[in-house]
Image (cartoon, rainbow, N blue to C red; front, side):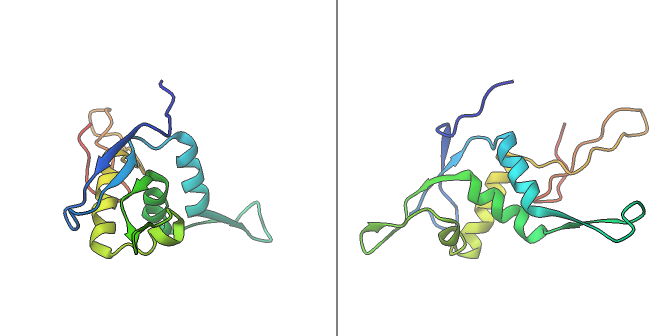
Amino acid sequence: MPLIWGDEVARFVPESDPAEWFDLKKELSSGDDDAILALVFGSEITANAADDVRLTMRVDLLNRERVRRSIVAWSYTRDGVPVELTAENVDRLDRRTYADLVEEVDRRNPLVLQQKKNKNGGASSPTTAATGKRQRA
C-alpha cells in the first residue's frame, strides 16, 4: 500500500461559490482516520465495568473533522489579506459551501461504517458515513 503525502492535493471549486477554490488532500491517511475516530467516539465505563461499557458517537463532529483535515489551502482573503486556514475559520464556511465540501471529501474518502455479508456469502456494498448512500463495490 502506498504512503500518503500531505502535498498530494486536488483543486476543488464548489458549485455554490465558483469564485473560490480549495486544495484538498487527495486521500486522508490512516492517521487522519484514527484522529477523526478518536474525536468522534468516546466511551464511558460505569462502576460495574465488566457489564456496562457505553460507546458514544459525536456525529456532529464526524464530517466537520473530515473536512478540516482535508483542506490544505484555500483562496479566501479578507481586505486583500489571505485568511488563515484554521479550524475556527473552517467553521465560518457558509452551509452550502460546507455541504459541497462534505460531498467532495466523502467522494474521495468514503468512510465505511459497516460491511455486512449478503445471502451469497459475499460482502454487500458498504454504507458511507457522510451520505448514508450505498457505494458500489
